Image (cartoon, rainbow, N blue to C red; front, side, top):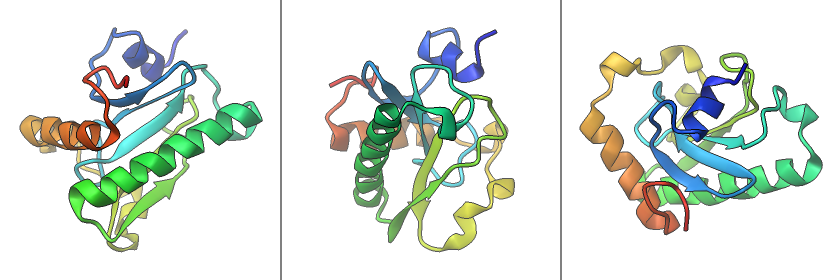
Length: 140
């Protein structure tokens, strides 16, 4: 049974992609800490980040770092937060989000889908894609 992330990758569920290649993909989460909150995932369904092939893990982190720089630039945050939790979806993923303090590290305070503004979500994705040089499908 495929994860919700695989369904997003396969186009079965809509996603706001900001990056995508053959190994990893990145899209906005529907439950953000702040607008611009992005998930970086391996294309392969692997539950725990500790089980990822080391080269996939390295590439995912390189992409996360690039997205982090884009987040700082796009949203004017002091830093880009980085978090691995992995309890919500059994598919390894890295959270990268605008951070000005430690509050973003509490995933209990995310915005629920009904609390987000779809236009703001679209704008956040567009800002990141512009800085990353990617299209709506996340590809360069």
